[in-house]
Image (cartoon, rainbow, N blue to C red; front, side):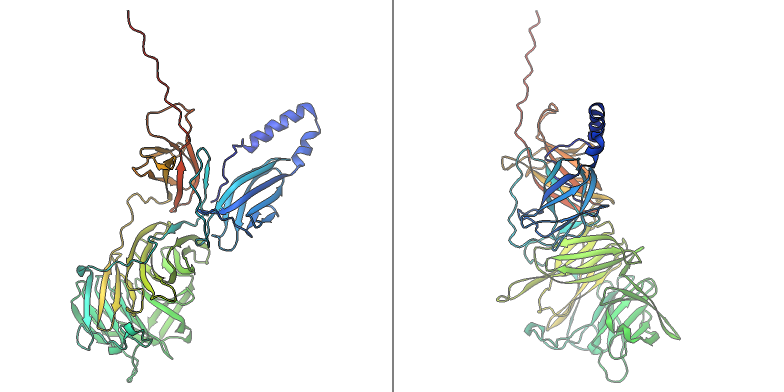
Length: 561
């Protein structure tokens, strides 16, 4: 939520109006009604957070009033409003939607200037001029859009982590024998017809199931990567299975979906014995991924909706569509909302968003995929990031991210491949929360297990993390006190001036004092007003300490006679 910069202290509106009413009542009886009807003027300047660039063409609307203003070329707006307290909503191209400016007071016949109000862009603005450190003694204002936590993805360049030998669970060469896989084409030469294993899934005990479509079979490996069994799949005749997906339910049943003119769904037991099968309606041609829950398979469609299926002797019965992948009582969605931004949403059954998490990247994003929802309810997504212009070879990575239902970033790891040398890239979520990645090149197939870091112990639900850096005369200050008296939270800055403090959702004022003994309340202190959304991380940047006041030297005691 956005809040105006409190550069000019203002008394509460009720106190000001009460005082004004009493004074006028004693002098001119008719004046109070005229003063109350006199409108006030509200002005301000919108600027991108972290940049000196103004925001032209944004709409500033007033909740509960038919009043709206558009910022000019310099980012300024002007509203004429009756006396009162208001909430403003800011919208515009390239901005995080529905940002709010709360507790805006307008006095009758007066002009209220909000000063500079920083608003959050969806991506880094073009030609962003970095904002300088704040001037000492000037109060800062940091804002967050309500229910829209935002994170900056780590890394300014592509830097995938290569797996250690113990992370490679399965390594199989090309062929038709047990533990081997069929490969076709050469992805190293950017062969568009290159094909390999279609899909991978993880069973309830950690076993791995690989859909080796070109060989017409599913191969099963135990949790340690040892080959255990294989069973055939097919659509009848000599037709090769190339477009297919495999999923395993919590009770060990295996589901194989194959596309084509007549999409099919077949159910097997853990040993590969076929139990049921059915031809699906033509609408299932839009399937993107296949998941399996406790019993029934779940189809993720290309439009982001899901359809749950029941297999029986009479055929298949579909239920849905639902607005995303089930995540407890909510449904998860993930999409690429721009070249630099990924959005993860938790929505209700009726499609209304409950929480929207913005993931901002300094490296261009080319693709986003849902990997699954783990047992804690975290949404795991795979974000493809590719760097390199048209004249250079693209270099890429895949970031695996876990986002909690509270909007916190629970884990992140950067993995290969990210370019066409590794054409076959599939991911499967394991019961322990790790992610199995299938890699394939011209010579072999590898199944690699990646562990995402667990959620921090102090990642408390309903709280946000505020971080920043204390400076004085451009230099970091170690040991400075950062406190919020109302929230009863206090921390000290580190050697480089940095600090982190967790605060409940709401609006808080942080008081920053230089290190040393407790001084008089007249000692100047830096202050930052910050709005915290549950699960959000807010970076207030550099906080400058005002010039200090010398310590008062107590007089020496008189000698005792």
